[in-house]
Image 1 (spheres, one colour):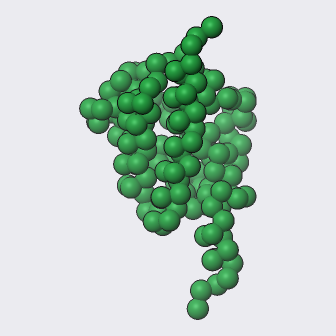
Image 2: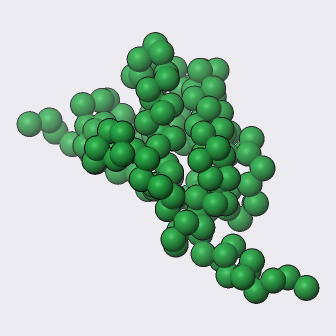
Length: 145
């Protein structure tokens, strides 16, 4: 028999820390981010977005892992170290269109597939990540003042 709290917890992605826990906590998110940036390094379609980053990805990896912790309902590690952030605004200076958004999502999709996530969480997470990816694309395509 399945414990009712397990069912409730699995159904609650996006509430409290359910997504954070489903991702494996801090260590799981750090592995996801490592695999994500490894994909960015090897996928030809991701070259343009890789080139938007510094040669040394240490800070980018740290920032994304810290951001995702809070975004998934875990500790607010990004703001503890870097302060507040507006993700679309922080990327506004970049030239991100459909191809760049899609390449970022492909890297993330590949990285998610490399994790030992429950299938429903993997689908949920990628669907949720499409939202900020699209917001970033939208802001980057707006006329610059």
